[in-house]
Length: 516
Image (tube, rainbow, N blue to C red; front, side, top):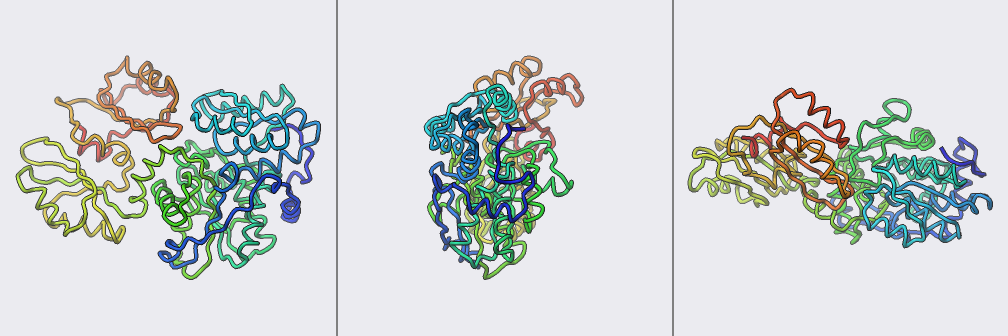
């Protein structure tokens, strides 16, 4: 829903109309022609020429400036006089604020109350007025649309608008001018504005170039829409790559992506972390997770399709990363590159057991070793092992340990083990407990923990609790409760709490290291 706008594009523009809009776009009044750089290290590793489009070099450090300025500049003088409004906790907010400031237009940005100060300050530094409202993006957006109607302001959507899409398409025009011999272009997908703009432009001019959309596995709204045949709401959205954490793809962006994208691939958070590291090591860029998404997809696509000797470009879409979030990226990137195995191994509780275990590893480097005395017979250790040959070597190690008489459970893909249990090994209760375990996503805002304790902690005993900040807008929490298997009242309180949660009671890492 948005205010009426006089547009040079029809409601459902064709490819030729989008091409004309891109060619006439005024975005270079504010945007930069960003570099297309060769990534020498990863090119050598993958056997292809890998190029990165550096949208982190824009004045707002992301591509979002293009679409925001294209739409705002297209408004009538009357609409400009009334100002513009949007809802965003990220890069779109900064793009709108910067564009409005350059055009001398009032901009009001509605941001969730939990938005990190660094983002609020950035919007204000670009000249935007900030209104903190609501616990999440949906509540902020509803408030923005209400204010737009009440005050006659124009709502600037983050992706689902023809002028926004055309603005993002200017990036593809630059790509073709910088390298007309590309074989494939990899584009991150959140709401689909960038992917739609890039795909429709490239297919008008050089249709032989393949355009591949890349989504985060836990926010793959385009994949869900393609499977259903129309846009659908995801039940939940992972927030690690927050720049693409979109529940529902736009109607117009879906129409274009379905028609013009050649393929779509999804990647997990560990692969994104590995791509962040690749970008830093190759071109010294520090990408936000969504900014490295396209490279993560490129790497996976090359491996799946055994691509060799091609020119492959990907878009580094943004670099507005919270510095403290890099700790999480650093911890997880080795797993994303299949350079580390995490194992639960049962060994005899006797002198020399650790030495014998390390000898059996054959000189491989141990990256992590967690242990606490539990009983007189056996010890269960949480161990990390450095890999040089990826998944095949991981299976080889497990087989070697099994052959040596050790019981082994592979935790390399166990999210709870990687997020929580590795920091809690040895914390067993002193008596048997009837215990259920849950993982939660807390909003990183004042009062979040208090709400949790008031809703659950005064009714049931909390037997375990672990939280570690990763510098994002939400916190990952692991909590145990003394409960029987069936307590409907507890489930009702969980629903009242309103935080995303999952029952983790049967998780193997919990059973090995924490359960009584």
